[in-house]
Image 1: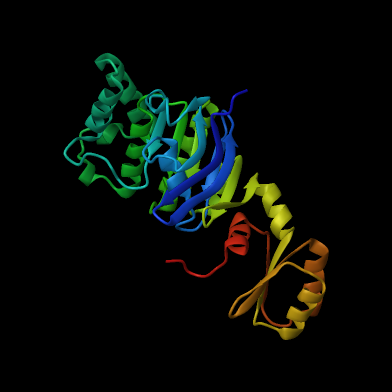
Image 2: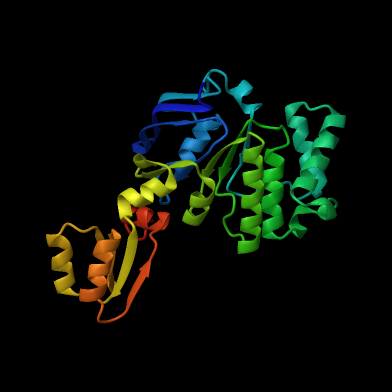
Amino acid sequence: MTPIIEATDLIKRYGEFTAVDGVSFEVRAGECYGLLGPNGAGKTSIIRMMYGFSPLSSGQMFLFGQDIERDWREIRARIGVCQQGNTLDPDLSVEDNLAVFAGYFCMPAPRARARTEELLGFFALEKKRKAKVLELSGGLARRLMVARSLINEPELLILDEPTTGLDPQSRHLLWEKLMALRKEGVTLLLTTHYMEEASYLCDRLMILDYGKILIEGSPQPLIKHYVGDSAVEIEGVDETLRQYLVKNHINHDVLDQRIIVYADNSVADHIRHHFCAEKCTFRAPTLEDVFLHLTGRELRE
């Protein structure tokens, strides 16, 4: 079966700066695929190339088996894009934001009205249909953004940090809606800084840094492979513990005030009995542990 997205040796340069450096990946029909990475890793550059907004410097990008550089008009009719920023029209009501956007796809008026009603119902926006965009909460505005990106019944939905700034209730509601779309056969491509979100939604994902792929795979196998069965956080940086970890080649991160050890359960039990005189926290490792271990914990500009 032809992949929904097939990218080969993607390169994107802005002058002397290379934002995307030889990235290759595939997205299969019906899955949710995640693009993760620190700010400036190249995620948004990949997405902009994907929907024809930004030309490739080199490489190839095929969507639905069609070349994005040659067939971008046909491709755009089959995808939906929910951008990171709020691009809703503040002068229009909720329902008019949907209906007017349908016109960009030359949708007949009766179908546009019907599709608007479907999406208002799906995203629980019926009671806000006459409200102006500026009257909406952040959660309602994001739901409307996603609804608008679905007006043309796309086969592929591209979501650039769709839940940034939302409260937990709004975020979880949007997750459930995205899961429902997947069950209907919509393929999702997602960028997010929320590792819990990526673990919950993504079948597969990649972590990028400095324009290159660090790892790719499914969330749980990646967690198992890179950080093991257990995470142990030990308060204080004990030199004896550090020497033990280095000597035995045990995966760990040393921070200013603590050490985080990633290991199997037997090693975690050994540390519990020999190095936990002070405060220790034992927990299951997460995708965030993988992300921070691979990309570092320092702040980026």
